[in-house]
Image 1 (cartoon, helix red, strand yellow):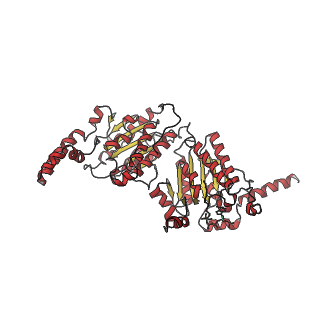
Image 2 (cartoon, rainbow, N blue to C red):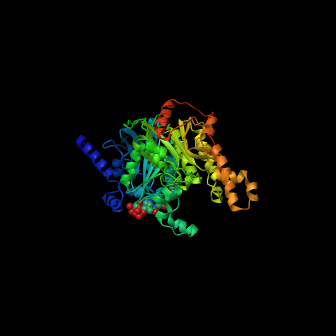
Image 3 (cartoon, rainbow, N blue to C red):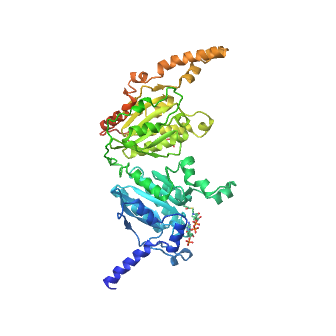
Amino acid sequence: MAFEEKIKELLDKRGEAKMGGGQKRIDKQHESGKLTARERIALLLDEGSFEEFDMFVTHRCTNFDMQKQSFLGDGVVTGYGTINGRLVYVFAQDFTVFGGSLSESMAQKICKVMDQAMKVGAPVIGLNDSGGARIQEGCNALAGYAEIFERNILASGVVPQISAIFGPCAGGSVYSPALTDFIFMSKENSYMFLTGPKVVKTVTGEDVSVDKLGGAMVHATKSGVAHFVGDTEEATIEQIRELMGYLPSNNFEEAPHVATDDPVDRMEDSLNHLIPENPNEAYDVKEVIDAIVDDGKFLEVHSKFAPNLVVGFAHMGGMSVGIVANQPKSMAGVLDCNASRKGARFVRFCDAFNIPLVTLVDVPGFLPGTGQEYNGVIVHGAKMLFAYGEATVPKVTVTLRKSYGGAHIVMSCKQLRSDINYAWPMAQIAVMGASGATEVLHGRALKEITDADEKAKFMAEKEKEYNDQFANPYNAAKYGYIDDVIEPRNTRFRVIRALQALQTKKDSLPMKKHSNLPL
Ligand code: HXC
């Protein structure tokens, strides 16, 4: 073959690979409102930055006459490129080839990018749209999944791993995304479940739609499986690009510094008046976050799940920070099973990837009751405690108002190796709130008072006595548990100064194989 023909052959093969399962199936993908794997990659990466691997890989299965149906690239597009100039590795399952189902060859392609990402220390982003294990390949497909899962596990805490779901993600294939750091789902067309509606009906008799069982909103609000939801595939991909701006490329790097014109010493007078005089009145902690971070920009994680705890990323003085804040606007900011799971996972991610933690505390305690106890609030709360106690990144805590009991300890108190703990003048740090404490301390006396007015008067007196003692930050500051009481309007400046001072912080854990996190 002449050289020219060889080049033509190459170009033809490339053209063929780019067509995936063929025009008909591409049209079907578009008709169902979905983008193709290549279109998704083009949106995700900087223009022209994609370098593809393994376009010429095909499956090697001969069961069921499979050799008669073969497509170049075999159901997944893989390679590397950049997001805002920073290297990332990517794979995108191609639903037009056997429904994106996972073959042995596909698994090898995915493992290749994961291995290389680990060698060079770059994030891996997987775009999922797949009918699961390729049925015709039997145990080879299962082995392929297991190879990917093992790499997900080894890469955990080494390079950020991001998954997006843009179609079906069913059966055991949900576990690769579940092993990664963040799951994105697009509102339309994406669903994740271990067993589909038909099996559910057979086994439990329950009638449920695909959406109700594992749609994006279900996982964003109820299960907490999805961290981010986008209205469209395009919006979801834009969210991934935005998230990458807060993350380092690997566990040895710092997150990139982002220059800002927002003055470090900007005073925010509104914060002096944000907290209502009545301690039982709510306010929106996101107003505090927006006021103290660079340019008011906050990327909330899990925004629709356990809203009583707010977590997310921001920059402060150009530094990437993870923010954890109780939300008085939702269930008075109480901690429960879901909030604890959410907080623990976020704290551990930040710690693994050198992102300092800023904790804003206004917490009345843990949610009481059988609902919580039966669901294991003890263990879930312990996860959060463990995550904060284990974290060695710089930790700055600001107590805005209430900080009671076990929840006070969990929310990055001094003794969990928090570095700098500030409090606003309205802070109240105590074992519990005044009325609960009065009931316990004066129960016997209260029982003896039969007149309701007299009882109320007695309660009010005792509550005042208690509040005089504990409804302030100075009692904790007296012992050095609070490093300083700060003016709310000056919070941004004081937190950034603290973070700057802590930039060279070194802390460690005792030598061990690994901890035994209360799972
Ligand atoms: C081989 C598959 C496939 C699979 C789909 N296809 N899933 N081929 N193995 N798992 C093929 C179809 O034959 C079809 O081929 C093309 O992909 C598109 O599929 P359709 O059914 O036409 O598309 P749609 O109507 O959109 O339905 C999508 C779907 C459905 C809901 C995903 O295909 C489906 O239910 N698939 C099976 C899902 C499943 O049970 N997977 C196994 C899960 S268990 P043509 O040639 O017509 O284009 C599992 C174990 C993993 O994954 C364990 C890991 C630990």
